[in-house]
Amino acid sequence: MEVISHCAEAIILRDGDNVVKRRLPKRYRIRELDEMIRRQRTKSEAKLIVEARKAGVPTPVIKDLSDFEIVMEYIDGRPLKEVMSEELVRKAGELVAKLHERNIIHGDLTTTNILVRGDRIYLIDFGLGYFDEDVESKAVDLHVFFQTLESTEIKAEELKKSFLEGYKRYKGWKAVVEREKEIRKRVRYA
Amino acid sequence: MRDIKIDSPVESVDIRNSSRSELILGIEGTAWNLSVGIVSEEEVISFAESAYLPKSGGIHPREAAQHHAEKIVDVLREALKKMKEKGFSEEDIRGVAFSIGPGLGQSLRIVATAARSLALKWRVSLIGVNHCIAHIEVGRWMCGTEDPIVLYLSGANSQVLGYMAGRYRIFGETLDIGLGNALDKFARSVGLKHPGGPEIERLAQKSSRYIELPYTVKGMDFAFSGILSAAKKLAEKYPLEDVCYSLQETVFAMCTEVAERALAHTQKDELLLVGGVGMNKRLQKMLKDMCEDRGARFYTPPPEYTKDNGVMIAYTGLLMMRSGCTIPIEKSRVNPDFRPDEVEVKWK
Ligand SMILES: Nc1ncnc2c1ncn2[C@@H]1O[C@H](COP(=O)(O)OP(=O)(O)O)[C@@H](O)[C@H]1O
Ligand SMILES: [Mg+2]
Image (tube, rainbow over all chains, first blue to last red):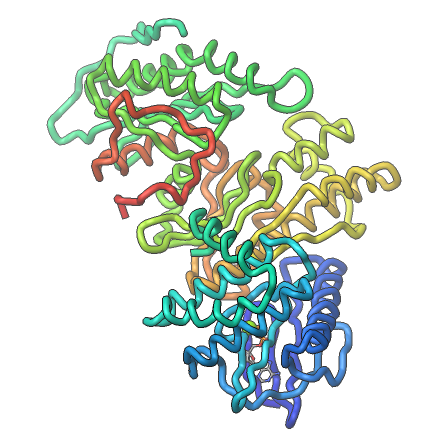
């Protein structure tokens, strides 16, 4: 199996039509706690991936789930970061609207966690996600996404506008956008 | 407030020469510790302090302010005396720095009043220092670290910061109470003496039995109050050592995880631990292990500079004065909610 990504928390292995996302143990924490956290996050990520799909958001199909591992469909696509366009980012906005309609918070909404295959967009990496109906959590999702655009895209302002066109499908969009502006004032997440 | 008379009985020995560096006096008093430090660019010249220990319960803001008001003259006098014993005189002091916030309003005002009157008396610059930034800068100074991710854990504050484009940005922070306060509150609820952190650490060493507690990390933020209530409940049923052990393992793992995430996010490879909770050996071990495993370096200053201290205010004051960040008396109002990312860092 080929390693396609290795970050602080997990390793991603390609296995034919599937990928394996394996959460790695941390030496700094005691075994009981380490296993509890990895088990919890693995389970919660799988659940959110399934719930997102039920909400009409394309996500990889889950093939198998064990304590620290999710086996899921390999998406033969490119991260949004590499194929950015106003049209695609508008679609991404529509998908995030669907998540927030169901109170699903992605938790790490960056342009590497959005994969584009043909004209379909997939959301991945729900490892930091959770359910919450609060405006604040939804605004943080937007904030993280905007920060990513601003730090990587020259046309960040246009792209944010396009994203919001899509996001306005969520009926609570106004309060979330307002709150995002407040968060911005607090100058956080750099 | 009383007039400040700081004339010391010890006569200074005049060994001054023109090449000697300028000194800054710094006063810290945001919370429990009233502390005065005097530094030059090269070294700590003098250090004196007086800690307020509540007779019962946690910090009472009014009592803390009273303590500071009563002790400030003595502490200043002691610091100046030590300075003179090293052959310096008051004329070597070129600036007076004080902790302008964040902290307890009443305590901050005592310290600010003292700083203003000294600056007027000596006709030198006044520098209002952000308490959190001072923790970071003294840590960088003592440890010789260039551009670290900073884990700042004290009683009231718990943040992960890093320098980026002219400011120390807050990547993550507590969503409710500071870690130190959470530990102290737990300790008090089970009858341990104040400050509770060291007591919990001592008891935790006697156990290796983990009892599950909530683990609350949200992205790069964390929260402690839910864990605090859960731990209090556990303490009704389980041996105290086991609860202390579980509490430490849980909250320190959360801090370590968030610190690691900030390192990964910024691709920095130094971690600096500051703030009173930073004296905990188990926390230091976890952070060290994490850093080792990802090829980063871990730093923490000696204990007297990890907790609140006047030296950190003096040293940051020196950096600020050099870059022109002094304030006129009329603009020296304290700011109890002063956030570190409001400070434009002009000295880096
Ligand atoms: N189902 C998948 N199909 C194709 N590539 C994937 C898939 N899941 C993850 N990846 C790739 O691996 C990278 C890391 O996976 P991710 O789930 O985002 O974990 P991490 O928490 O390490 O960011 C992604 O950015 C993506 O490039
Ligand atoms: Mg990812």
